[in-house]
Amino acid sequence: MKHKDGKPIGQPDKNRIIPIAIIFVVLCGFSFYIGGIFCSEKSRFAFINSHKSLESPTGSSVASLKVKSTSFPECSSEYQDYTPCTDPRRWRKYGSYRLTLLERHCPPIFERKECLVPPPDGYKPPIKWPKSRDECWYRNVPYDWINTQKSNQHWLKKEGQKFLFPGGGTMFPNGVGEYVDLMQDLIPEMKDGSIRTAIDTGCGVASWGGDLLDRGILTVSLAPRDNHEAQVQFALERGIPAILGVISTQRLPFPSNSFDMAHCSRCLIPWTEFGGVYLLEIHRILRPGGFWVLSGPPINYERRWRGWNTTIEEQKSDYEKLQELLTSLCFKMYNKKDDISVWQKSSDNNCYDKLSRETYPPKCDDSLEPDSAWYTPLRACIVVPDPKFKKSSLTSISKWPERLHATPERISMFHGGSASSFKRDDSKWKKHIVHYKKLIPDLGTSKIRNVMDMNTVYGGFAAALTNDPVWVMNVVSSYATNTLPVVYDRGLIGTFHDWCEPFSTYPRTYDMLHLDGLFSAESHRCEMKYVLLEMDRILRPTGYAIIRESSYFVDAIATIAKGMRWGCRKEKTANGSETEKILICQKKLWYSSNKS
Image 1 (cartoon, rainbow, N blue to C red):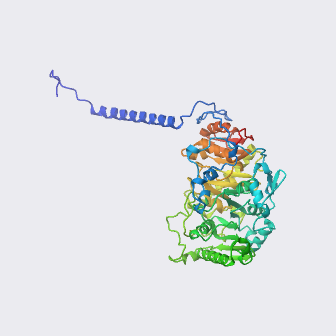
Image 2 (image 1 turned 30 degrees about the vertical axis):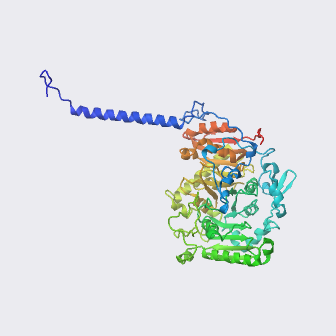
Image 3 (image 1 turned 60 degrees about the vertical axis):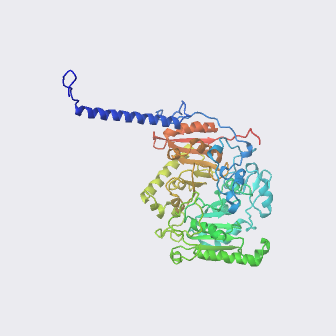
């Protein structure tokens, strides 16, 4: 080819064009990437402004998230017992069928409260354990209704400025101690360390669980928020483990085959109705070889029916239906005396293997994960224990306290779980607890009783505190690896939870909250502000929060905490890491200036 003047046109060098084109594409792509990061970060942290970071112990500067300082207002005093996901103000939105209204129904994001829940007027720091088991300050749980309605059953009584807990109950008028003594005669395994974990459905004020603590048995006391005001709040005020919950249409937030014993004392759950789903749920969470204890209707109906506003024929029919259902679930009558009956779940799978396809309830199919328990609907089918775990039954698992440090068989259920990782975790938390006690001298004393580990793995934090006068609620994120079966196999207690939602407890029910990297793991799902406000709701005034977190989040957390009237200080980790810090915070005691 030539120019119009006849001179040849120079051909471009192809070898030169290719590198230039590549450089051009790379530069365009890099510019697009930087722009995307800037835009997304600008959108995500639109509220960010400049804020002076806390001074780090070493004085070094590490990249950190900055947030605008905010002072949160007080909620109205009518919210002093606010339980967001079980709020009676919202019950009218849900049906009464199978008491669905008492289940978790969390408010949408636009209805969330961005205020600080106040304590009742006259609130005092709780009475210290073990004295708290028998008495609490009236002004801390100022509910006269339960005192009036239940005084004849000796649940509690008001004297002066205190509520006293005589240890009575509907089925143990002579005191809970005598009742449990009889139970131990029927179940010798309660005495030798075989039984370590228990669940009490319809727990009242948790006197049964409180008595068992002295006998080396750790109980999750469960009750709904219903017309018995503040049952669970009373339990936690006493220093006894408890959680809001009800067996209705959803599974309880616990893994399968976990509790060594389950108990119901006149809890009035219709066990044989709706295809037996309530008893099927107890069967699911009860360990193979575990015990189910029932007192109250229809037990001992021959003597008791007159006081139950029924007929002997009706109660006899109820008892026969219950016995038939239990037999179909591979339970066997273990022992019985007076008002207490005890059944034992099959310790192996021989009974389940013999169940035919025509039996009812049927065995669950493989589509239903046995340990799925966060908003998982109840189904009228039998969860058969996995036969490969032969050492997880009550007859095979180590007795307490050896169980605490024995590597659980079910650790093999998830990726990375092994005996070596279990031992490393145990060793790590022993060192961390030594360091924590230097930072908070109250830890390990009677000043701290109710403790929550907000995102545990194997329960190592709780295990390192077993010799202290505390109990620990181990929380495993419903979005994390399911390690809660390991926690229960160690003889510890815990629950599933999603920290993007409020927890199932009353305000002011924990003395200490501990979290390890929770914001690093969940900040892409959960807004930090709402998690911290929930921590403020459930933490007692003068209570502590130990926040072990990436250096990136620590200053932002401290800024939000200051707006919640917390006093915080940043500390080094035991190994002096620059990428991880510890924030020690203490909630201040204040009284509401707003009146309902």
